[in-house]
Image (spheres, helix red, strand yellow):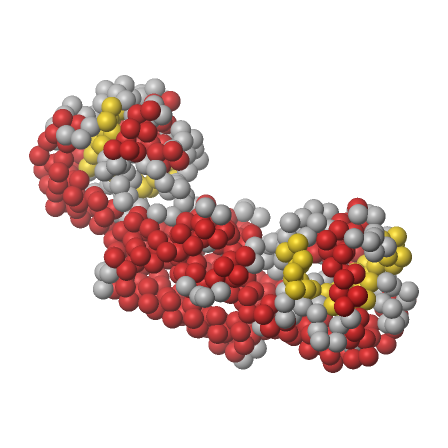
Length: 291
Length: 291
Protein backbone atom coordinates (compact mmCIF):
# COMPACT_ATOMS: atom_id res chain seq x y z
CA UNK A 1 0.00 0.00 0.00
CA UNK A 2 1.58 3.27 -1.12
CA UNK A 3 1.43 6.05 1.44
CA UNK A 4 -1.30 8.41 0.20
CA UNK A 5 0.35 11.52 1.61
CA UNK A 6 -2.01 14.45 1.90
CA UNK A 7 -0.67 17.96 1.99
CA UNK A 8 -4.05 19.24 3.07
CA UNK A 9 -6.96 17.33 4.54
CA UNK A 10 -10.15 19.27 5.23
CA UNK A 11 -12.76 17.91 7.61
CA UNK A 12 -16.28 19.32 7.72
CA UNK A 13 -17.71 18.34 11.08
CA UNK A 14 -14.96 17.65 13.61
CA UNK A 15 -17.07 15.46 15.90
CA UNK A 16 -16.37 11.95 17.07
CA UNK A 17 -16.10 10.55 13.53
CA UNK A 18 -14.35 13.46 11.84
CA UNK A 19 -12.05 13.99 14.82
CA UNK A 20 -11.14 10.29 15.03
CA UNK A 21 -10.34 10.23 11.31
CA UNK A 22 -8.05 13.25 11.79
CA UNK A 23 -6.27 11.60 14.72
CA UNK A 24 -5.89 8.24 12.98
CA UNK A 25 -4.63 9.72 9.70
CA UNK A 26 -2.25 11.95 11.59
CA UNK A 27 -0.91 9.07 13.63
CA UNK A 28 -0.32 7.10 10.44
CA UNK A 29 1.73 10.05 9.19
CA UNK A 30 -0.47 10.54 6.16
CA UNK A 31 -1.56 14.16 6.46
CA UNK A 32 0.66 17.20 6.70
CA UNK A 33 -2.00 19.75 7.52
CA UNK A 34 -5.57 19.21 8.74
CA UNK A 35 -8.19 21.95 8.53
CA UNK A 36 -11.46 21.75 10.46
CA UNK A 37 -14.72 23.44 9.50
CA UNK A 38 -17.93 23.28 11.49
CA UNK A 39 -20.99 24.94 12.94
CA UNK A 40 -19.67 25.16 16.48
CA UNK A 41 -16.69 27.46 17.05
CA UNK A 42 -16.47 26.07 20.56
CA UNK A 43 -16.02 22.55 19.27
CA UNK A 44 -13.45 23.62 16.64
CA UNK A 45 -11.43 25.50 19.26
CA UNK A 46 -11.43 22.39 21.39
CA UNK A 47 -10.31 20.32 18.39
CA UNK A 48 -7.44 22.75 17.86
CA UNK A 49 -6.52 22.65 21.55
CA UNK A 50 -6.58 18.84 21.56
CA UNK A 51 -4.34 18.73 18.48
CA UNK A 52 -7.00 17.00 16.41
CA UNK A 53 -6.80 19.68 13.71
CA UNK A 54 -4.06 22.14 12.80
CA UNK A 55 -6.30 24.97 11.69
CA UNK A 56 -9.90 26.03 12.00
CA UNK A 57 -11.54 27.83 9.11
CA UNK A 58 -14.83 29.55 8.50
CA UNK A 59 -14.26 30.82 5.00
CA UNK A 60 -15.25 27.91 2.83
CA UNK A 61 -13.42 28.99 -0.33
CA UNK A 62 -10.20 29.38 1.61
CA UNK A 63 -10.67 26.16 3.56
CA UNK A 64 -11.21 24.11 0.43
CA UNK A 65 -8.41 25.67 -1.63
CA UNK A 66 -5.58 23.24 -2.31
CA UNK A 67 -7.23 20.39 -0.46
CA UNK A 68 -6.23 16.86 -1.44
CA UNK A 69 -9.11 15.29 0.41
CA UNK A 70 -12.28 16.71 1.91
CA UNK A 71 -14.18 14.56 4.40
CA UNK A 72 -17.79 15.45 5.12
CA UNK A 73 -18.43 14.01 8.60
CA UNK A 74 -21.81 15.62 9.14
CA UNK A 75 -25.33 14.56 10.05
CA UNK A 76 -26.79 13.56 6.67
CA UNK A 77 -29.31 16.40 6.88
CA UNK A 78 -26.38 18.83 6.48
CA UNK A 79 -24.78 17.16 3.48
CA UNK A 80 -26.65 18.86 0.67
CA UNK A 81 -26.03 22.36 2.01
CA UNK A 82 -22.30 21.77 2.49
CA UNK A 83 -21.85 20.03 -0.86
CA UNK A 84 -23.46 22.95 -2.66
CA UNK A 85 -21.32 25.39 -0.68
CA UNK A 86 -18.01 23.73 -1.51
CA UNK A 87 -18.80 22.86 -5.14
CA UNK A 88 -17.78 26.20 -6.74
CA UNK A 89 -14.41 26.14 -4.94
CA UNK A 90 -13.29 22.58 -5.62
CA UNK A 91 -10.06 22.02 -7.51
CA UNK A 92 -10.06 19.27 -10.11
CA UNK A 93 -7.73 16.96 -8.15
CA UNK A 94 -9.56 17.27 -4.81
CA UNK A 95 -11.25 14.08 -3.60
CA UNK A 96 -14.50 14.51 -1.70
CA UNK A 97 -15.68 11.72 0.57
CA UNK A 98 -18.19 11.48 3.39
CA UNK A 99 -18.98 9.53 6.53
CA UNK A 100 -22.76 9.63 6.37
CA UNK A 101 -24.85 6.80 7.82
CA UNK A 102 -27.13 6.70 4.76
CA UNK A 103 -25.87 6.52 1.23
CA UNK A 104 -28.66 6.79 -1.37
CA UNK A 105 -29.55 10.31 -0.25
CA UNK A 106 -25.90 11.40 -0.05
CA UNK A 107 -25.35 10.08 -3.58
CA UNK A 108 -28.40 12.00 -4.79
CA UNK A 109 -27.11 15.22 -3.21
CA UNK A 110 -23.73 14.69 -4.84
CA UNK A 111 -25.36 14.20 -8.25
CA UNK A 112 -27.20 17.46 -7.68
CA UNK A 113 -24.44 19.61 -6.16
CA UNK A 114 -21.14 18.09 -7.28
CA UNK A 115 -22.20 17.45 -10.89
CA UNK A 116 -18.92 18.26 -12.58
CA UNK A 117 -16.92 16.65 -9.78
CA UNK A 118 -18.66 13.28 -9.51
CA UNK A 119 -15.66 11.22 -10.61
CA UNK A 120 -13.88 12.47 -7.49
CA UNK A 121 -16.74 11.92 -5.07
CA UNK A 122 -16.42 8.71 -3.02
CA UNK A 123 -19.32 8.02 -0.66
CA UNK A 124 -18.41 5.94 2.40
CA UNK A 125 -19.75 4.98 5.80
CA UNK A 126 -17.41 4.16 8.67
CA UNK A 127 -19.48 1.89 10.91
CA UNK A 128 -18.24 3.21 14.22
CA UNK A 129 -19.28 5.69 16.79
CA UNK A 130 -21.81 5.27 19.50
CA UNK A 131 -23.94 7.42 21.69
CA UNK A 132 -21.24 9.96 22.39
CA UNK A 133 -20.60 12.92 20.16
CA UNK A 134 -18.32 15.92 19.80
CA UNK A 135 -14.55 16.06 19.38
CA UNK A 136 -13.90 15.08 23.00
CA UNK A 137 -15.13 11.60 22.09
CA UNK A 138 -12.64 11.30 19.20
CA UNK A 139 -9.96 8.62 19.33
CA UNK A 140 -7.22 7.50 16.94
CA UNK A 141 -8.33 3.92 17.59
CA UNK A 142 -12.03 4.36 16.81
CA UNK A 143 -11.87 2.64 13.43
CA UNK A 144 -9.54 -0.22 14.32
CA UNK A 145 -11.21 -3.44 13.12
CA UNK A 146 -14.38 -1.54 12.23
CA UNK A 147 -16.13 -1.83 8.90
CA UNK A 148 -15.99 1.02 6.46
CA UNK A 149 -18.52 0.55 3.68
CA UNK A 150 -17.64 2.32 0.44
CA UNK A 151 -20.41 2.85 -2.09
CA UNK A 152 -18.77 4.34 -5.20
CA UNK A 153 -21.07 5.71 -7.88
CA UNK A 154 -21.02 4.62 -11.51
CA UNK A 155 -19.04 7.75 -12.34
CA UNK A 156 -16.59 7.52 -9.43
CA UNK A 157 -12.98 7.13 -10.56
CA UNK A 158 -11.45 3.81 -9.44
CA UNK A 159 -8.16 5.41 -8.46
CA UNK A 160 -10.03 7.86 -6.25
CA UNK A 161 -11.78 4.96 -4.52
CA UNK A 162 -8.41 3.30 -3.98
CA UNK A 163 -6.90 6.41 -2.39
CA UNK A 164 -9.78 6.81 0.08
CA UNK A 165 -9.74 3.10 0.78
CA UNK A 166 -6.03 3.29 1.61
CA UNK A 167 -6.72 6.08 4.09
CA UNK A 168 -9.31 3.97 5.90
CA UNK A 169 -7.03 0.94 5.88
CA UNK A 170 -4.34 3.11 7.45
CA UNK A 171 -6.85 3.94 10.20
CA UNK A 172 -7.05 0.23 10.96
CA UNK A 173 -10.47 -0.29 9.38
CA UNK A 174 -11.76 -3.15 7.25
CA UNK A 175 -13.07 -1.85 3.96
CA UNK A 176 -15.76 -3.31 1.74
CA UNK A 177 -17.74 -2.11 -1.25
CA UNK A 178 -21.42 -2.32 -2.13
CA UNK A 179 -24.09 -0.22 -3.85
CA UNK A 180 -25.77 2.66 -2.08
CA UNK A 181 -29.03 0.72 -2.07
CA UNK A 182 -27.51 -2.43 -0.60
CA UNK A 183 -25.95 -0.26 2.08
CA UNK A 184 -29.19 1.44 3.01
CA UNK A 185 -31.07 -1.87 3.15
CA UNK A 186 -28.51 -3.53 5.39
CA UNK A 187 -28.19 -0.64 7.80
CA UNK A 188 -31.93 -0.04 7.97
CA UNK A 189 -32.17 -3.54 9.46
CA UNK A 190 -29.16 -3.70 11.76
CA UNK A 191 -28.79 -0.07 12.78
CA UNK A 192 -31.56 2.36 11.87
CA UNK A 193 -34.46 0.20 13.06
CA UNK A 194 -32.81 -0.74 16.40
CA UNK A 195 -32.13 2.93 17.10
CA UNK A 196 -35.79 3.78 16.51
CA UNK A 197 -36.87 0.89 18.74
CA UNK A 198 -34.61 2.02 21.58
CA UNK A 199 -35.76 5.66 21.39
CA UNK A 200 -39.35 4.39 21.29
CA UNK A 201 -39.00 2.27 24.42
CA UNK A 202 -37.26 4.93 26.50
CA UNK A 203 -39.85 7.50 25.46
CA UNK A 204 -42.77 5.20 26.31
CA UNK A 205 -41.41 4.94 29.85
CA UNK A 206 -40.13 8.52 30.17
CA UNK A 207 -43.55 10.01 29.47
CA UNK A 208 -45.32 8.13 32.28
CA UNK A 209 -46.08 9.73 35.62
CA UNK A 210 -44.12 7.01 37.45
CA UNK A 211 -41.13 7.08 35.09
CA UNK A 212 -38.55 7.77 37.82
CA UNK A 213 -39.71 4.73 39.76
CA UNK A 214 -39.70 2.58 36.60
CA UNK A 215 -36.18 3.65 35.60
CA UNK A 216 -34.96 3.01 39.14
CA UNK A 217 -35.68 -0.71 38.65
CA UNK A 218 -34.08 -0.93 35.21
CA UNK A 219 -31.17 -3.36 35.31
CA UNK A 220 -28.22 -4.07 33.03
CA UNK A 221 -30.35 -5.54 30.26
CA UNK A 222 -32.43 -2.39 29.94
CA UNK A 223 -29.34 -0.22 30.09
CA UNK A 224 -27.68 -2.09 27.22
CA UNK A 225 -30.89 -2.33 25.20
CA UNK A 226 -31.36 1.43 25.39
CA UNK A 227 -27.73 2.52 25.12
CA UNK A 228 -28.28 3.64 21.52
CA UNK A 229 -31.15 5.87 22.68
CA UNK A 230 -28.36 8.06 24.07
CA UNK A 231 -27.27 8.88 20.50
CA UNK A 232 -27.51 12.27 18.84
CA UNK A 233 -31.17 13.20 18.21
CA UNK A 234 -30.24 15.34 15.21
CA UNK A 235 -28.18 12.64 13.57
CA UNK A 236 -30.91 10.04 14.03
CA UNK A 237 -33.72 12.32 12.91
CA UNK A 238 -31.71 12.89 9.73
CA UNK A 239 -31.11 9.18 9.22
CA UNK A 240 -34.76 8.29 9.82
CA UNK A 241 -35.85 10.80 7.19
CA UNK A 242 -33.02 10.11 4.74
CA UNK A 243 -33.66 6.36 4.67
CA UNK A 244 -37.41 6.79 5.09
CA UNK A 245 -38.68 4.35 2.50
CA UNK A 246 -36.57 1.36 3.48
CA UNK A 247 -36.87 2.11 7.18
CA UNK A 248 -40.67 2.18 6.98
CA UNK A 249 -40.56 -1.23 5.36
CA UNK A 250 -38.36 -2.56 8.17
CA UNK A 251 -40.63 -0.99 10.76
CA UNK A 252 -43.67 -2.63 9.17
CA UNK A 253 -41.95 -6.03 9.24
CA UNK A 254 -41.09 -5.55 12.89
CA UNK A 255 -44.63 -4.48 13.77
CA UNK A 256 -45.86 -7.66 12.10
CA UNK A 257 -43.46 -9.67 14.24
CA UNK A 258 -44.74 -8.00 17.43
CA UNK A 259 -48.31 -8.70 16.40
CA UNK A 260 -47.34 -12.34 16.00
CA UNK A 261 -45.69 -12.35 19.44
CA UNK A 262 -48.80 -10.81 21.00
CA UNK A 263 -50.95 -13.49 19.36
CA UNK A 264 -48.75 -16.29 20.71
CA UNK A 265 -48.77 -14.83 24.22
CA UNK A 266 -52.53 -14.28 24.11
CA UNK A 267 -53.18 -17.91 23.27
CA UNK A 268 -50.41 -19.11 25.63
CA UNK A 269 -48.50 -20.85 22.86
CA UNK A 270 -45.39 -21.54 24.93
CA UNK A 271 -43.99 -24.03 22.44
CA UNK A 272 -43.96 -21.50 19.60
CA UNK A 273 -42.50 -18.76 21.83
CA UNK A 274 -39.74 -21.02 23.06
CA UNK A 275 -38.96 -22.09 19.49
CA UNK A 276 -38.61 -18.47 18.35
CA UNK A 277 -36.57 -17.42 21.40
CA UNK A 278 -34.27 -20.43 20.90
CA UNK A 279 -33.83 -19.67 17.21
CA UNK A 280 -33.03 -16.03 18.00
CA UNK A 281 -30.56 -16.91 20.72
CA UNK A 282 -28.76 -19.44 18.52
CA UNK A 283 -28.59 -17.03 15.60
CA UNK A 284 -27.16 -14.33 17.81
CA UNK A 285 -24.58 -16.63 19.39
CA UNK A 286 -23.55 -18.02 16.02
CA UNK A 287 -23.45 -14.75 14.12
CA UNK A 288 -22.30 -12.19 16.65
CA UNK A 289 -20.32 -14.21 19.14
CA UNK A 290 -18.98 -16.88 16.79
CA UNK A 291 -20.25 -19.70 19.05
CA UNK B 1 -28.30 -7.04 61.76
CA UNK B 2 -28.23 -10.35 63.64
CA UNK B 3 -26.50 -13.17 61.78
CA UNK B 4 -29.32 -15.38 60.51
CA UNK B 5 -27.31 -18.60 60.74
CA UNK B 6 -28.77 -21.44 58.72
CA UNK B 7 -27.96 -25.02 59.60
CA UNK B 8 -29.43 -26.18 56.32
CA UNK B 9 -30.15 -24.17 53.20
CA UNK B 10 -31.81 -25.98 50.30
CA UNK B 11 -31.67 -24.55 46.79
CA UNK B 12 -33.94 -25.80 44.05
CA UNK B 13 -32.31 -24.80 40.77
CA UNK B 14 -28.56 -24.28 41.20
CA UNK B 15 -28.13 -22.05 38.15
CA UNK B 16 -26.63 -18.58 37.98
CA UNK B 17 -29.07 -17.15 40.54
CA UNK B 18 -29.31 -20.12 42.91
CA UNK B 19 -25.59 -20.77 42.68
CA UNK B 20 -24.68 -17.14 43.29
CA UNK B 21 -26.96 -17.04 46.33
CA UNK B 22 -25.23 -20.16 47.69
CA UNK B 23 -21.78 -18.64 47.13
CA UNK B 24 -22.70 -15.27 48.65
CA UNK B 25 -24.42 -16.75 51.71
CA UNK B 26 -21.52 -19.13 52.25
CA UNK B 27 -18.97 -16.33 51.95
CA UNK B 28 -20.93 -14.33 54.55
CA UNK B 29 -20.64 -17.35 56.85
CA UNK B 30 -24.39 -17.68 57.16
CA UNK B 31 -25.04 -21.25 56.06
CA UNK B 32 -23.50 -24.41 57.52
CA UNK B 33 -24.76 -26.85 54.91
CA UNK B 34 -26.14 -26.18 51.44
CA UNK B 35 -28.12 -28.80 49.54
CA UNK B 36 -28.81 -28.49 45.82
CA UNK B 37 -31.75 -30.02 43.96
CA UNK B 38 -32.32 -29.75 40.23
CA UNK B 39 -33.32 -31.30 36.94
CA UNK B 40 -29.80 -31.64 35.58
CA UNK B 41 -27.53 -34.09 37.43
CA UNK B 42 -24.67 -32.76 35.32
CA UNK B 43 -25.20 -29.24 36.59
CA UNK B 44 -25.54 -30.38 40.22
CA UNK B 45 -22.32 -32.39 39.98
CA UNK B 46 -20.58 -29.31 38.64
CA UNK B 47 -22.03 -27.25 41.51
CA UNK B 48 -20.65 -29.80 43.96
CA UNK B 49 -17.25 -29.79 42.25
CA UNK B 50 -17.13 -25.99 42.27
CA UNK B 51 -17.96 -25.93 46.00
CA UNK B 52 -21.20 -24.04 45.37
CA UNK B 53 -23.23 -26.68 47.23
CA UNK B 54 -22.21 -29.24 49.86
CA UNK B 55 -24.63 -31.97 48.83
CA UNK B 56 -26.81 -32.85 45.88
CA UNK B 57 -30.12 -34.54 46.51
CA UNK B 58 -32.82 -36.10 44.38
CA UNK B 59 -35.14 -37.34 47.10
CA UNK B 60 -37.31 -34.32 47.83
CA UNK B 61 -38.53 -35.44 51.27
CA UNK B 62 -34.96 -36.01 52.41
CA UNK B 63 -33.67 -32.80 50.84
CA UNK B 64 -36.30 -30.69 52.53
CA UNK B 65 -36.09 -32.34 55.98
CA UNK B 66 -34.66 -30.03 58.61
CA UNK B 67 -34.22 -27.11 56.18
CA UNK B 68 -34.16 -23.63 57.69
CA UNK B 69 -34.58 -21.96 54.33
CA UNK B 70 -35.59 -23.27 50.91
CA UNK B 71 -34.86 -21.08 47.90
CA UNK B 72 -36.73 -21.82 44.68
CA UNK B 73 -34.45 -20.42 41.96
CA UNK B 74 -36.34 -21.89 39.02
CA UNK B 75 -37.93 -20.70 35.79
CA UNK B 76 -41.39 -19.59 36.93
CA UNK B 77 -43.01 -22.32 34.83
CA UNK B 78 -41.46 -24.86 37.24
CA UNK B 79 -42.62 -23.19 40.46
CA UNK B 80 -46.03 -24.78 40.85
CA UNK B 81 -44.77 -28.33 40.38
CA UNK B 82 -41.93 -27.89 42.89
CA UNK B 83 -44.08 -26.12 45.46
CA UNK B 84 -46.63 -28.94 45.35
CA UNK B 85 -43.83 -31.50 45.60
CA UNK B 86 -42.20 -29.95 48.69
CA UNK B 87 -45.44 -29.00 50.50
CA UNK B 88 -46.10 -32.36 52.23
CA UNK B 89 -42.53 -32.48 53.60
CA UNK B 90 -42.16 -28.96 54.96
CA UNK B 91 -41.45 -28.52 58.66
CA UNK B 92 -43.28 -25.72 60.44
CA UNK B 93 -40.20 -23.53 60.95
CA UNK B 94 -38.90 -23.83 57.37
CA UNK B 95 -38.96 -20.60 55.38
CA UNK B 96 -39.67 -20.91 51.66
CA UNK B 97 -38.63 -18.11 49.35
CA UNK B 98 -38.13 -17.82 45.61
CA UNK B 99 -36.20 -15.88 43.00
CA UNK B 100 -38.80 -15.81 40.25
CA UNK B 101 -38.96 -12.93 37.77
CA UNK B 102 -42.76 -12.67 38.07
CA UNK B 103 -44.60 -12.48 41.34
CA UNK B 104 -48.38 -12.60 40.93
CA UNK B 105 -48.28 -16.10 39.46
CA UNK B 106 -45.77 -17.34 42.04
CA UNK B 107 -48.03 -15.98 44.81
CA UNK B 108 -51.02 -17.75 43.26
CA UNK B 109 -49.11 -21.06 43.12
CA UNK B 110 -48.11 -20.64 46.76
CA UNK B 111 -51.72 -20.03 47.77
CA UNK B 112 -52.64 -23.20 45.94
CA UNK B 113 -49.77 -25.50 46.98
CA UNK B 114 -48.39 -24.10 50.23
CA UNK B 115 -51.78 -23.34 51.82
CA UNK B 116 -50.92 -24.29 55.39
CA UNK B 117 -47.44 -22.80 55.09
CA UNK B 118 -48.24 -19.38 53.68
CA UNK B 119 -47.02 -17.41 56.72
CA UNK B 120 -43.55 -18.78 55.98
CA UNK B 121 -43.58 -18.15 52.23
CA UNK B 122 -41.70 -15.01 51.22
CA UNK B 123 -41.78 -14.24 47.49
CA UNK B 124 -38.80 -12.26 46.20
CA UNK B 125 -37.07 -11.29 42.96
CA UNK B 126 -33.34 -10.62 42.88
CA UNK B 127 -32.92 -8.30 39.89
CA UNK B 128 -29.68 -9.73 38.62
CA UNK B 129 -28.52 -12.22 36.09
CA UNK B 130 -28.10 -11.75 32.42
CA UNK B 131 -27.96 -13.84 29.33
CA UNK B 132 -25.73 -16.50 30.83
CA UNK B 133 -27.12 -19.45 32.72
CA UNK B 134 -26.03 -22.53 34.63
CA UNK B 135 -23.89 -22.83 37.74
CA UNK B 136 -20.66 -21.94 35.88
CA UNK B 137 -22.03 -18.40 35.63
CA UNK B 138 -22.55 -18.16 39.41
CA UNK B 139 -20.59 -15.60 41.41
CA UNK B 140 -20.56 -14.56 45.07
CA UNK B 141 -20.64 -10.94 43.87
CA UNK B 142 -23.67 -11.21 41.57
CA UNK B 143 -26.04 -9.44 43.97
CA UNK B 144 -23.73 -6.68 45.19
CA UNK B 145 -25.60 -3.38 44.79
CA UNK B 146 -28.43 -5.14 42.94
CA UNK B 147 -32.08 -4.71 43.82
CA UNK B 148 -33.94 -7.53 45.48
CA UNK B 149 -37.68 -6.88 45.40
CA UNK B 150 -39.62 -8.64 48.14
CA UNK B 151 -43.35 -9.02 47.70
CA UNK B 152 -44.69 -10.51 50.96
CA UNK B 153 -48.28 -11.73 50.94
CA UNK B 154 -50.93 -10.59 53.40
CA UNK B 155 -50.39 -13.77 55.37
CA UNK B 156 -46.58 -13.71 55.32
CA UNK B 157 -45.06 -13.45 58.79
CA UNK B 158 -43.09 -10.22 59.27
CA UNK B 159 -40.25 -11.97 61.07
CA UNK B 160 -39.91 -14.38 58.16
CA UNK B 161 -39.62 -11.44 55.76
CA UNK B 162 -36.94 -9.93 57.99
CA UNK B 163 -34.89 -13.13 58.00
CA UNK B 164 -34.90 -13.46 54.22
CA UNK B 165 -34.22 -9.75 53.85
CA UNK B 166 -31.16 -10.13 56.11
CA UNK B 167 -29.85 -12.92 53.91
CA UNK B 168 -30.11 -10.74 50.80
CA UNK B 169 -28.50 -7.81 52.60
CA UNK B 170 -25.65 -10.12 53.55
CA UNK B 171 -25.26 -10.90 49.84
CA UNK B 172 -24.65 -7.18 49.27
CA UNK B 173 -28.07 -6.49 47.73
CA UNK B 174 -30.41 -3.53 48.22
CA UNK B 175 -33.79 -4.73 49.37
CA UNK B 176 -37.18 -3.12 48.83
CA UNK B 177 -40.78 -4.19 49.28
CA UNK B 178 -43.85 -3.81 47.08
CA UNK B 179 -46.97 -5.75 46.15
CA UNK B 180 -46.86 -8.59 43.67
CA UNK B 181 -48.91 -6.51 41.25
CA UNK B 182 -46.67 -3.45 41.50
CA UNK B 183 -43.72 -5.74 40.87
CA UNK B 184 -45.22 -7.31 37.77
CA UNK B 185 -46.21 -3.92 36.34
CA UNK B 186 -42.77 -2.40 36.83
CA UNK B 187 -40.87 -5.36 35.41
CA UNK B 188 -43.22 -5.80 32.48
CA UNK B 189 -42.11 -2.32 31.39
CA UNK B 190 -38.38 -2.33 32.14
CA UNK B 191 -37.53 -5.98 31.68
CA UNK B 192 -40.14 -8.29 30.14
CA UNK B 193 -41.05 -6.02 27.22
CA UNK B 194 -37.42 -5.23 26.28
CA UNK B 195 -36.59 -8.93 26.26
CA UNK B 196 -39.47 -9.61 23.88
CA UNK B 197 -38.39 -6.73 21.65
CA UNK B 198 -34.82 -7.99 21.46
CA UNK B 199 -35.87 -11.58 20.66
CA UNK B 200 -38.25 -10.16 18.04
CA UNK B 201 -35.57 -8.12 16.28
CA UNK B 202 -32.98 -10.89 16.18
CA UNK B 203 -35.56 -13.32 14.86
CA UNK B 204 -36.74 -10.92 12.15
CA UNK B 205 -33.18 -10.80 10.86
CA UNK B 206 -32.24 -14.42 11.53
CA UNK B 207 -35.08 -15.76 9.39
CA UNK B 208 -34.06 -13.86 6.25
CA UNK B 209 -32.11 -15.50 3.44
CA UNK B 210 -29.32 -12.90 3.78
CA UNK B 211 -29.14 -13.04 7.59
CA UNK B 212 -25.43 -13.91 7.73
CA UNK B 213 -24.60 -10.85 5.64
CA UNK B 214 -26.88 -8.64 7.76
CA UNK B 215 -25.37 -9.84 11.04
CA UNK B 216 -21.87 -9.31 9.65
CA UNK B 217 -22.53 -5.56 9.49
CA UNK B 218 -24.07 -5.33 12.97
CA UNK B 219 -21.99 -3.03 15.14
CA UNK B 220 -21.74 -2.41 18.87
CA UNK B 221 -25.17 -0.80 19.12
CA UNK B 222 -26.90 -3.86 17.69
CA UNK B 223 -24.85 -6.14 19.88
CA UNK B 224 -25.85 -4.31 23.06
CA UNK B 225 -29.45 -3.88 21.98
CA UNK B 226 -29.79 -7.62 21.43
CA UNK B 227 -27.65 -8.86 24.30
CA UNK B 228 -30.77 -9.88 26.24
CA UNK B 229 -31.88 -12.01 23.27
CA UNK B 230 -29.09 -14.33 24.41
CA UNK B 231 -31.09 -15.12 27.57
CA UNK B 232 -32.65 -18.48 28.41
CA UNK B 233 -35.56 -19.24 26.04
CA UNK B 234 -37.28 -21.38 28.67
CA UNK B 235 -37.07 -18.73 31.36
CA UNK B 236 -38.40 -16.03 29.06
CA UNK B 237 -41.18 -18.16 27.63
CA UNK B 238 -42.28 -18.76 31.22
CA UNK B 239 -42.12 -15.07 32.10
CA UNK B 240 -44.02 -14.03 28.96
CA UNK B 241 -46.83 -16.44 29.82
CA UNK B 242 -46.79 -15.82 33.58
CA UNK B 243 -47.10 -12.05 33.21
CA UNK B 244 -49.27 -12.34 30.10
CA UNK B 245 -51.95 -9.81 30.90
CA UNK B 246 -49.71 -6.92 31.91
CA UNK B 247 -47.14 -7.73 29.23
CA UNK B 248 -49.79 -7.64 26.49
CA UNK B 249 -50.80 -4.19 27.71
CA UNK B 250 -47.18 -3.02 27.56
CA UNK B 251 -46.79 -4.53 24.12
CA UNK B 252 -49.90 -2.74 22.88
CA UNK B 253 -48.58 0.58 24.21
CA UNK B 254 -45.29 0.00 22.45
CA UNK B 255 -46.99 -0.94 19.17
CA UNK B 256 -48.92 2.32 19.40
CA UNK B 257 -45.66 4.20 19.85
CA UNK B 258 -44.16 2.52 16.76
CA UNK B 259 -47.25 3.37 14.76
CA UNK B 260 -46.77 6.98 15.81
CA UNK B 261 -43.09 6.87 14.80
CA UNK B 262 -44.02 5.42 11.40
CA UNK B 263 -46.55 8.22 10.92
CA UNK B 264 -43.98 10.90 11.73
CA UNK B 265 -41.41 9.38 9.39
CA UNK B 266 -43.98 8.98 6.62
CA UNK B 267 -44.89 12.66 6.72
CA UNK B 268 -41.24 13.70 7.30
CA UNK B 269 -42.01 15.42 10.59
CA UNK B 270 -38.37 15.93 11.58
CA UNK B 271 -39.23 18.41 14.33
CA UNK B 272 -41.46 15.93 16.17
CA UNK B 273 -38.94 13.11 15.75
CA UNK B 274 -36.10 15.22 17.07
CA UNK B 275 -38.23 16.30 20.02
CA UNK B 276 -39.00 12.70 20.97
CA UNK B 277 -35.41 11.52 20.48
CA UNK B 278 -34.16 14.42 22.60
CA UNK B 279 -36.68 13.71 25.35
CA UNK B 280 -35.72 10.03 25.36
CA UNK B 281 -32.01 10.76 25.45
CA UNK B 282 -32.37 13.25 28.30
CA UNK B 283 -34.57 10.90 30.30
CA UNK B 284 -32.08 8.10 29.88
CA UNK B 285 -29.10 10.26 30.82
CA UNK B 286 -30.91 11.67 33.84
CA UNK B 287 -32.40 8.43 35.09
CA UNK B 288 -29.85 5.79 34.26
CA UNK B 289 -26.58 7.68 34.14
CA UNK B 290 -27.34 10.34 36.74
CA UNK B 291 -26.34 13.15 34.33
